[in-house]
Structure formats: structure tokens, C-alpha cells
Length: 226
Ligand SMILES: *Cc1c(COP(=O)(O)O)cnc(C)c1O
Image 1 (cartoon, protein in one colour):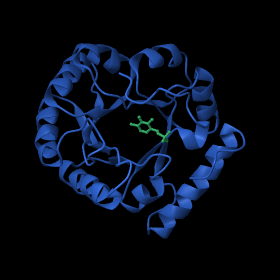
Image 2 (cartoon, rainbow, N blue to C red):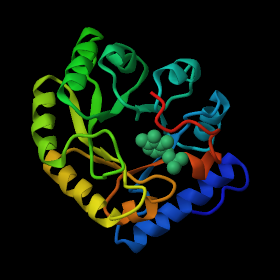
Image 3 (cartoon, rainbow, N blue to C red):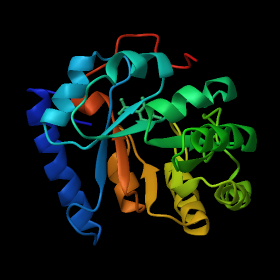
């Protein structure tokens, strides 16, 4: 991963170009991979900079941060990528357009109820666990059944999100993510972060989730916070 230099707009432009190059080299169309700007632990200004740089998708891991930052934003799609706590389902359904991290039935049911109560149809992805270093995520073999059940509940299940392993068998993990996406159906395979997005694009990712390569390093202690 190249060290982030320049302004956010310059980094986004350079990243967009590289993503298109890697896509084309993998036999895919330029522009077929969306860049989701992950702004966790960065200020609201970072969100505005990402949108100003032409990105349409932004993501947060924590409800409280989104409450502070997702105020009066220009048009964009807001993605929740953190662990879904059932007691926060109503807040999540109210603050976000897409919930990428539905990894179990009770979280999905709580989101389905919250979105029914709000009179809207929430778009979600099933988070699949393809890595021994990852705590959350449905087992790949359970994902198609979970997706079917959530569709019955009225959620718009649009694909799969997965987090790659910190080390070890990245290819195996990404191959499992793609295979599960094919079984679940939908249009979005959310796969790849600053350190592994090139490989994710080669495995068919349609959305890479990028924080560090756009905004630089986060302040310490963000990992594993609830
Ligand atoms: C923080 C985070 C990212 C972005 O990670 P970077 O390595 O900074 O690009 C992507 N996806 C999820 C689920 C995250 O929590």
C-alpha cells in the first residue's frame, strides 16, 4: 500500500485511477468497483472531503460517530459497517441507507422491524466470516439461508460483505467470499480494504472499503472498540 500523501481529493483521484487499472487488468470494466470511504475515527470534515472528492459512498462503524458526523450531508449513500447490536437496530436503520454487517438472524430481525416501523425498505448485506482473525460474520454455509429468511422479513438483501484475514490464506478467504456472494445473490460484494483491495478486485469485489489509504492513519485504539 502506498503511503498516503497529498490532499484527500488527490488521494481519491489516484486511488480511483489505480482501481480502474487493476479492474481492467483483471478483465473487468473501469468504474465497476465502487470506493466506500471509511471515516471512522476521523472528523466530519473528512466525510465532507470524501464527498467533495466525488465519492458517493461513506461508511462508519459506530452509531455514535455517525450521529455526530452524518448531519446535513450532501446527497450520498451511508453504509454501516460495524457490529450490529440489536438494541441499536432502530438507530442504525435511522442513520444509514445500507447495513453491510448483518451476520445473524436476531440482528436482521431487529433491523427488519425497525425499517418496517420507519416505513422504508432497508438495504443490507450479509457479513460472512472467511477468516480466523475475524470475530464476526455468519459461516459461509449459513449465509444463503440467512439471506432467504431476511428477504422474507422484507429486507433488501443485496449481497455479501467480508473482511479478509490479517495474514495467512487471503486467496482462500476471498474465494470463499465470492462463492458465498454467488449463492446469496444481489449486486454487491463488499470486499477489500487499504491493505488488500487489489487482490479483492481480482476476486470480483464490487465495493472496496477504504480508510487509511484516503485519510491516513487513524488515532490508536480504534480496533475492537464496540
Ligand atoms: C476500518 C474498516 C475498514 C477500512 O480499513 P482501512 O484499512 O483503513 O482501509 C474497512 N472495513 C471495515 C469493516 C472496517 O472496520
